[in-house]
Length: 332
Ligand code: KG4
Ligand code: ZN
Image 1 (cartoon, rainbow, N blue to C red):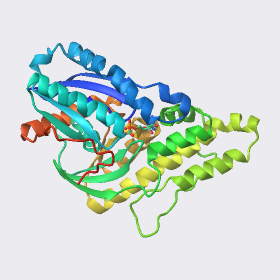
Image 2 (cartoon, rainbow, N blue to C red):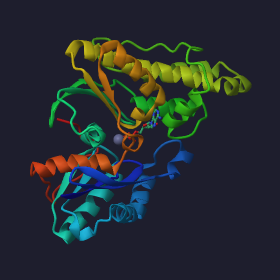
Image 3 (cartoon, protein in one colour):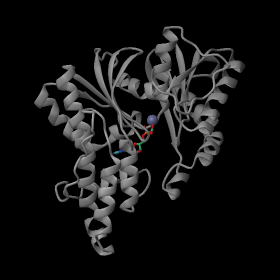
């Protein structure tokens, strides 16, 4: 079976080809236009998708050595995400489906991130915990089986990726902020500044990052310009440490309470090197396994959509032409 997966929910235009459960190509174009605005500008995102999507699909097919007429099914993200950006992908795929006479399937972007770990680890045992950390979401799922997800934890305010992006803006680093902080923090001392992790009333599991961002802003504003420059790497390292330890503390709590021994990490923040390093240490402490996707499958990509599509295709669950994007789509 040959599956094409398309992702256009935010600022990555991506297409991937999967043949018999193996990803054979994954072409991603990251829209650079947003960096000068310090965040994604929705209108520009739609226009960029519109401009490059057909070329990205062509490249993905070419790399996989697949002719367009041989595709059996197409999967496309239909939410959550930016309405205009989603519309470009969904409508393109509807057109392809009609022209080629093949079925298509609308895929939930969050479920796509969860499935990303199946690309490198196809036989993960259920149940497993999934820490989904992206620019828009910070959630811990108990994945009991395919399509059986139980939400344990979410964020009360900012998402972890958003905390990285906002922190980077305060420190005058580029956008997206996660990779920038990750890089600069390697030169700094994570113990130089104490950014405390907030406790949430009435919830042992939920996250909150907006107070952390304010603490960074205050600390940064206390300094003059020279000191801000000198201390940038120490501030980045200390701030990153607080975000990552907050994520891992909650995961530790979930491991203890559920006794589940496999934890997958998904979403853009899964690329973070400090998170990967600290998770390794927890593996020994709790005798558990942390699984991370390859770097190209952490941030938004077509491959995670293709692998999720292949599951629905096997179960003969298809979409029809009435499918519309749902910007605030959740997992049931
Ligand atoms: O999954 P993703 O590509 O898009 C969403 O679905 O939101 O995640 C993007 C987020 C951004 O906030 C970006 O700053 C963050 O992932 N990110 C990272 C790293 N690489 C990307 N955060 C921390 N460390 C990284 N290395
Ligand atoms: Zn995403």
